[in-house]
Length: 79
Image (cartoon, rainbow, N blue to C red; front, side, top):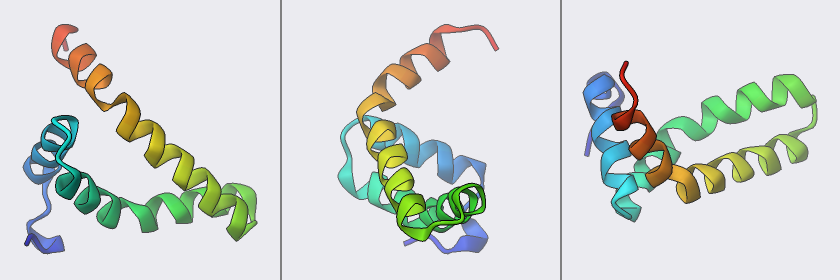
């Protein structure tokens, strides 16, 4: 398992690609890594922990549902 020191851009990209291929373990690792950051950011906006947790849940659900579409757009658009 990766630790935070080794979680660079290539780890993130690899996890996203695996997640888009319906690799639940890879997506779980992304969630584990980004959940605290997303929760902190949404809490700063809402000032309500329950609302922030709900928003993060929605964000992660949409990310899972739309991952493949995002990857297709990312690779088909010139950067």
